[in-house]
Length: 202
Image 1 (cartoon, rainbow, N blue to C red):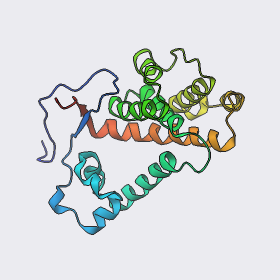
Image 2: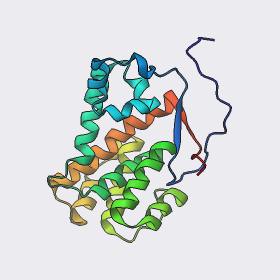
Image 3: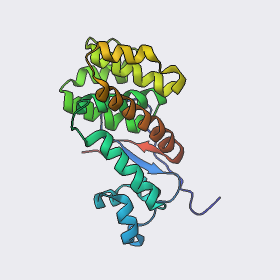
Image 4: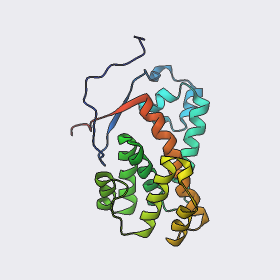
């Protein structure tokens, strides 16, 4: 076995949660003391050097930099379009569909925080994406995100119509698509590189 492969002794979480989970890589992340200015440029935010996932991806700093700036623009650029809570809901829906417990925990927590509706978010985690949601915008965003995640061909004019009928304009619809599409890809990358760890005991 390669010396860069890591063995773990913990039991990975196996249920969806809004709790703050950890994450450990199956391959060795780049050590902090080996990071150069080129790596920090790729991290974009120097604080991400504390995260093993980003220290693994920063082995290719240019690609990570492009990935991070895209991520930041999708979720943090709120100059019109979809409210932050619904952007996070689109990512949480994709992550729930793909079975990415770590990503679902992060984005469900953000969705709950920004919407002030933790029970509705928890229903998504506990009962799945088909669980009842009374808000037509939530229903439309979840449905569109799931369709796009299962396979892009399942996302159709019917999803766009549902989003429009729920009161979303074109820019908001694009934001919902971007949130789900980005995390449809990001889930698969994270699921192939490591696994979540239990929340730290307080």
